[in-house]
Image 1 (tube, rainbow, N blue to C red):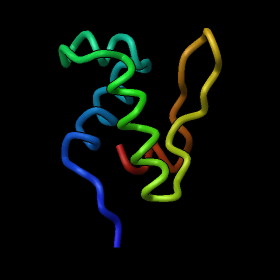
Image 2 (cartoon, rainbow, N blue to C red):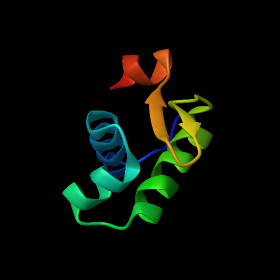
Image 3 (spheres, rainbow, N blue to C red):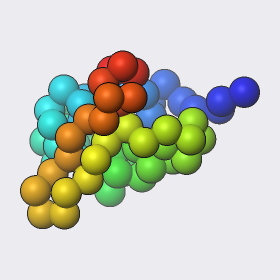
Length: 69
């Protein structure tokens, strides 16, 4: 059974909507590190890769991430 929080899901959803961690963090008034950590923990818990990460260029939803969002 997966154990994750609604907060992790809301941070994931906002990041998916914004297309990046920095903008999601600004919208939710939290640090980018908190958003990144929540997404990492959500991915670890579920065993799914939700975003493709491109250093210095941002994120893109994977097909699995798009289904979840």
